[in-house]
Length: 156
Image 1 (cartoon, helix red, strand yellow):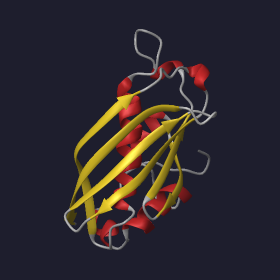
Image 2: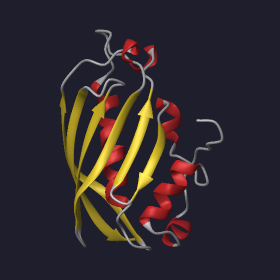
Image 3: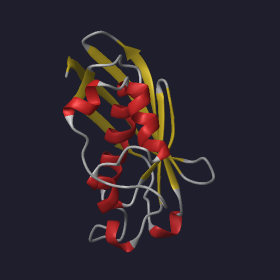
């Protein structure tokens, strides 16, 4: 994640950007990633309209007491990639927030899993509600987790 910065972006600045410009700025490093990305160690590596990809390499810091990556980490990755996929479809001056999401954890994730990829894809981009789904996969393409989200779209 060399060259990336972390922080928040003012509402005034957000109003100047389309959703796609925003997520592409996060991916390119011209805009700061949120501080949770720094805490967990994930990066946004791809951003196009309707699709956003995050990556993370699990470490011992991500583990629950049973030695697998905590489900909350996986939930955060899915919430982030799916929500950003919705955001990438929005016009300038609009934002979104998660109304609800559901995840299914398919396989255990450990530090031995190596780099994992969380991909969010738009299902429906409406004027008031956006729907996306997400997949977390390992380096062999195996499905580790799946999710869906519904996001509220609103003017900034």
